[in-house]
Image (cartoon, rainbow over all chains, first blue to last red):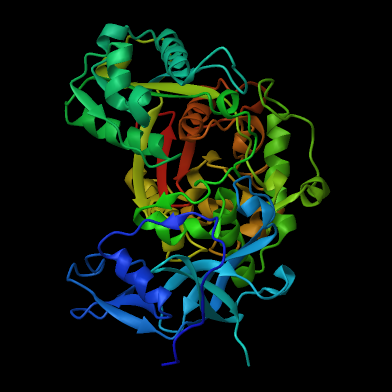
Length: 145
Length: 382
């Protein structure tokens, strides 16, 4: 397990903000501390993301599982037209599905390299931007060597 | 069996609101079929919100129903409706079913492309969307991720996807009502603006106004009506996810399950199908659906479309009304697939008529490649 992820605090946040419910607040709070969570079912072993109050496989109650924050690009797109603020001022940008080393897929923006350098299979690592105090949103960047 | 079809006005109808499209389509389906409005005792509608929900529209239209269904699976809702309506008729829950759809999307929004975004700046978002909303994905971007993965795994090219748009446009040229009718080349598609890599503007459907209605009834009642009946030979629906980030395999839709199941229920194979109306929200949608139904092997969709099989004179003419890519797409296009399939089987498709058309498939996709519904229709009693 790697040490905690980089957390960027105090940046202006103009994007939609996770509202949080009883369960997701735990996920976003952990991310704000630099810990990325998925769920693991103690009954059948399934790993899942996004967090739910049940395992979608067997219906049992899942547990949190901290992951490494490392993965590869499973697929992606470069958004070049988007009418909504603030995204329309940030074009072009990458939306990717990242396959975590631990299994589940997670959506996120991939930053830190030219959009044309992004490719499927690219190794990436998570960092976190705090949207509001205690609400961390995971982003991705190319893995540093 | 389907005994009545009706279209409201498209692609632009600024004088109609969504409810007005429902009404006009219903009136035309009644006139088409010869069914009296008072005979309708089942109603299905995928509408959302206060005015357009099934219960609200049933009241507005004045339908005294014994069966009602508000299934909403996005654009494929109507393929699910036909499946449900056929079962309700078979079980005797009702005797004459009406399905309606209407949308003033173009006139209301003034937009012609789905990149408006789903959420507002600093909006607090709940539910599964809170894991996607911060990233600014678009509707086009969701489909683009599927296209990118398909290209990676199978070598599918942008040229091959463009061939789908080119073929559909050729058929739109035969439809005087289609939004875009001028011929299109592969280069035109590839040189159109990139919206969300690898999907260009001309890989995307139009946004239009429009509405449609279907009337289904029993064999006994169909005997006295105006039109040759169109038989529901088999239908099936399946889902793999709702939100795009939950799509388990970005190269395969639930068509791979419900397509073969619908054909098995109809007692046919892909070789028996004379025309298919695929949901063509994007070019990649068509490719994934045709692979799922087994018209070619998984991964072979690119070469299959490049060989021209889906074109006007191909062996499987598809989207013969000009599709969502060129004719009309008011938001949920599934009912138009069924109406065009019925026109083909009646022999009423005009210059786009497929010769000796006996079996037609309508394949709807709803959400983000999420909910797929397949309906196999036939000209002859099964």
